[in-house]
Length: 25
Image (cartoon, rainbow, N blue to C red; front, side, top):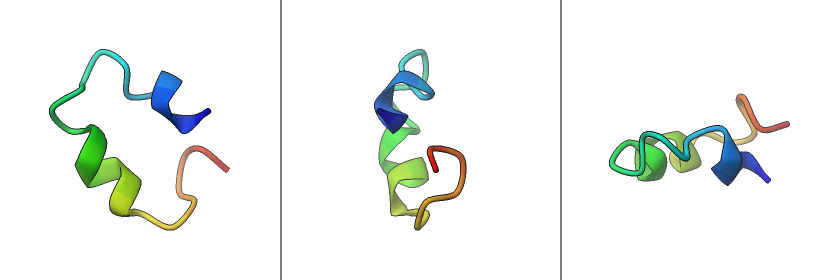
């Protein structure tokens, strides 16, 4: 899951989630 990528940055998770399959594709 893409959540694993932003585990350390739980605060920025939401910002990354906004991106349509950017890093977690």
